[in-house]
Image (tube, helix red, strand yellow):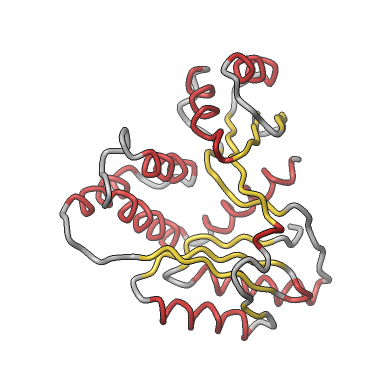
Length: 236
């Protein structure tokens, strides 16, 4: 099960390599979420994005500026769009985007796949290979205490584990808020990870040459302005 946390760590490390891009992506995601309701105590989706942003070390001033911008009323409208496709040797890839120009985004995503030996597929072609999972983890906790608290609060979890980094709980996405509250009630203020993510049900391995081509595809996708998240099933 630790493979799930390793996947999150890999994503964090990859995004940390270019801080300006990750800050811009979170700023946009927070802005779009806040347009419907800028108060995170009311807008649970906004609060969840803010909590995730904090685990990626997004500064508070960027979060606040995005929310203030959303309060301004009219602004650019963005659409959520998801693309699915295949990398080298049929590796599964899901690309989540926020865009104000669907034609541009579709063209850029398609080009990234084509240039790196991959291809776009139809909706649903690879998403069935992924589970949508809540993963919450923190330091300075005892697994037994966390498990007892989860049971007391009737939380339905998939797994719990302790690694060198801390204690991690995995569950269906609908349990996210309940499990987060359990951690907070145990005194957690800073999370190692606190998000809903997509995790592959099975992984594939690539040889060195194929992996280089696949990594170029992922890098190119993540560099696109409209791309928020990229998920895949290649073993890290």
